[in-house]
Image 1: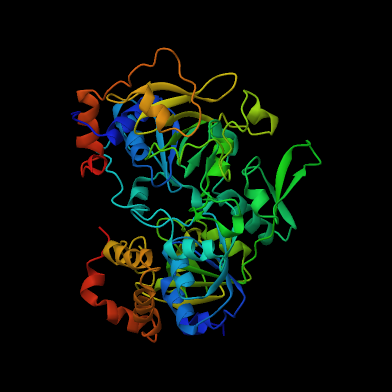
Image 2: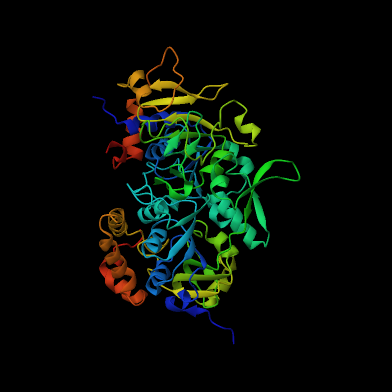
Length: 261
Length: 288
């Protein structure tokens, strides 16, 4: 029995991806990403800038950066140094290649296209009406790279084809898929789930198994994925959280244990 | 003599007629939202997200929504009444996203037929929303989206303070899309925690976030159960209770109706609503 949860492992995986000096934007409903940006900032990224709800801040001097108590907990903006709502929300897009973002989805296809619109064939009578795209179409268009973060690894989520696409990842595949339609951003880099980490294979940009979490088998991942995944001969195990990472996460970020529930 | 612009929440919402397009800022100006429910306005097109949107749908006020996000609360990924009404077809959704919404509001503010926007190219959004047109731009030949005007008839906002002449101050910055909504709308009503003297506005004009709101509604705790920066925090248990009832709406529609009656239809005005909530509960929300 591991002494950490899947969400804690996902937070560590994502935190390791973030580099000092980057600007990271976080939306709502992806707790692993919420924790990861805080961990990276306190751990190895004193020049990371956090953007929450349009408020931009550097809070590396704090002993702890608590998680929001509830979605849309706007107290997080109290540390802001500037606030984009007073000007234009999508200002200085030309700098967004330095920005990193995280995105969820009710469906994700093999090329990292994501769907927050809904499930069904007829848009006017959806079987499941989703929450809507928030800002993910614009963010995914412009940010330097983004991470798809799923709270469930499920064949109904990881599907062969999204019923609707709200954020364009790698389209129908290919390194030039984004350039062809004029999207300046770098596209999705990884898809992180409670079972594994996947990337997008250069060339086809199809989803490829990068590492599996401890206790998970390749067969299990295949069974829980609704499309054919590229599986290399050797699939390493995801590096487990170190004692230092867990100390940082639990004592300085997720003090209420939201990721342990 | 300069004309004062302070009116009651009842008068303000009497500007809203069946079939109009209204925009609701963040935090939602709930004192006015509740009055819209109480007045039984119908067939509105609503630009909004969150509990206020869901409540207006539950109360039967909405025919169409311009929505970039209809997420709920902890454990409520999609607003329950929004979801039910959208799935049954009784609610039309003008599918968009934040950048597209801002572009449409900007087009309205600047009296342009459309604004170009890139976010959404390659997605299903222009397919499911035929008002959005993909076009080749005449300068560089890129494919972009032409976003037509999104023009609210009335925009309803909540802010910290204003003087009697419509000079508004937000504490800690204006909410989410407030300034976009303000710039685009024909008429703007702002409810505020405090009415402050005009001298105070003149002492620091840079602090004025909205100049010339058409009307000011004095509504302390007017954003309840939402937060109001510098005054109070979100009433989380109250919001949770709403979503518990809303999530159960298909099994127990009567409970939803009772909730709407209790908090929106029965209190005659904002003061009566606050009495129903109770002073102890409100005081406990003090921001720290």
